[in-house]
Length: 115
Length: 138
Ligand SMILES: Nc1ncnc2c1ncn2[C@@H]1O[C@H](COP(=O)(O)OP(=O)(O)O)[C@@H](O)[C@H]1O
Ligand SMILES: [Mg+2]
Image (cartoon, rainbow over the protein chains, first blue to last red):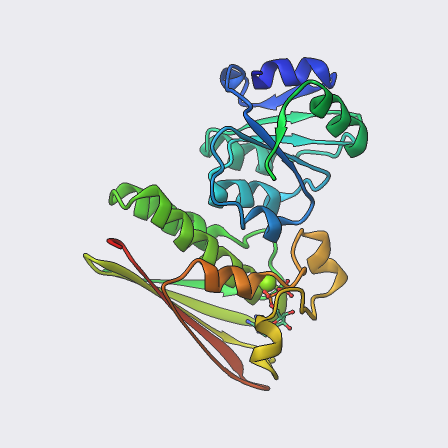
């Protein structure tokens, strides 16, 4: 499934990186714990779903080579975050849905968990 | 090649900017993505530790043709028990640090797992120096 299709399923909005909406979402991790995300070795085709929305969540994606981020519960995404994300060719989505519902929908749609 | 960066304790806005610059530099030099990632994950956790736990610090990056050597020297409270701090889950992080997505006690174990050589020197009341090396050809 593409990240663009993910956006539709979770009634989300593309915050930045719309040019990357054809990227394939192969696997998903949901976490608010950045140290946990930093332990993932293989991050290819990986989407991070997080309730955390700050510069450190973008930095974590940068260090981990994660280029797709979905922020839940309509958390604000600042211009600084967008700038940093754009520098790293990231696509960021946001949804009003909470974490559990978001994960349920995407799990039901057949996207594999990372572990 | 040698580079020096400065880090301020408590400055969560800029936490990670050194790691970001080092990542760009290693990519430009054509270091393999796997080793770039190991290096910047270790560096980022160590950089966040200065911001989260110390007052200020300097990061020096020494690049050789076959390895990268990074030294993070901070002025801060030091670590009273390094064995305790190295164990996964052990942390003294403040709620503010946890709000940032850190403070789960996984930073030092992550640094160990992502470095080829790691050395930690610390003195209570003075500060901590984390020193690690990653080799480009393994
Ligand atoms: N640079 C430092 N200065 C002082 N204490 C530190 C430093 N780095 C780590 N520590 C101590 O070691 C503990 C474990 O560090 P770490 O594994 O990175 O976990 P966390 O940062 O999530 O607490 C910290 O909670 C802190 O007590
Ligand atoms: Mg830490």
